[in-house]
Length: 524
Image (cartoon, rainbow, N blue to C red; front, side, top):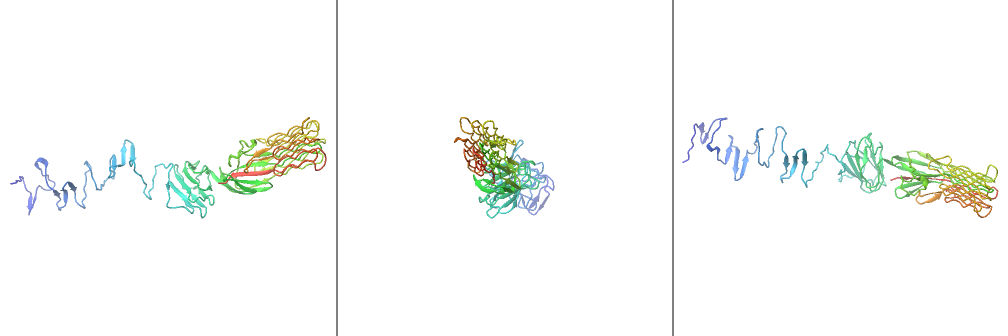
């Protein structure tokens, strides 16, 4: 039979035998106690076993691990509470064994290969850069004014009207994006407005987005540049707002460019536009000079000034536009002056045309051609100079007067022997001297620009007259030929010079052609 040997049995109550007393140890030889359950005095299990499952504690119990204790093995289905709120481990794993957080040296890795790391709805983050990606708000299409938040991308529907998007107060690394939901930005624009003193592309002002289908990503760089466009799906549109203007005859070319053509006085009225996007290319041509009479020379083409065209779509320009910057444009009214052509005179030099003006650009009138009377032989000075009249010794007028860079015109041709007069100067070439033998001098060639969509030559010099049929031809760009009888007038809005006439009289020489002003800019 079994035997229990003890030095002392503290107590027995019914069927319960108490071994030892409070806080006393009970020694078991061999350090082995075999039982299926160890219970507390209230009858609840402290440790129990059922099959291969070991249970520590019972429902409602709190199981404490002393601070100095070490736990090895696996704990599943448990909630661990640390009184110090610190749990130390080199790796925290999910139930599938993949790391949720792990550390190797000074490198901390969140998630494992194939995992998706998500920020809970309503949660925020700091200390993480967001270069190149946003959280697109696909469930909330914007149709009215709103304030954007850092890290968000917005689809904006302007079908019903324009929308203003106010940017958040920027901190370096902040990112905001937007896209044209319904391809309607060209009909109803989106205005992007900075917060307070923040800049957009270096300018503290709003930017209008008017391009159909535009998608745009903005990153806040620093206080100088502010929000910078780092990736749009069209062309660069940041740094100001596009021009909106009235005045003259308005056409649209190459989809995104407006052209205002003034054939007479008017006003270029700008109602919107700011920053780097608010610039305009131009062609400003003055009125051409009239031809001389009584062995008269050709009148000169009007002064020809243009920009390079690089700011409003690279169209073809004359050599005079090479390297010339477009004009900065602000919200205001710009008076436009279109110069008239010079008038022919009786038995003397032809009259100069008049100047054309747009903003700071003044093109000088073309000079009249010389005649025969004393003091009237030489050609007149101007944007281009008139040719010299009479026979031999006459001097052509000086072009590019007053001087500008690049030159706005060329000199007139001198007279030659045998009643061969000189041609008027043109925008890109000087008038030619009268020959003997040979014809009277032809006018110099004008400039050729496609600013309004197709190439058109303008501001050519008029041809010199001769006593015979060999009068000089007019230069390309509106200049008219000289004549042994009556010369023709140059066409309006060409800035061409009138042809010289050989006989005397009030109506024999040709009048100069009026000028023109053309303005071109990108509007979307």
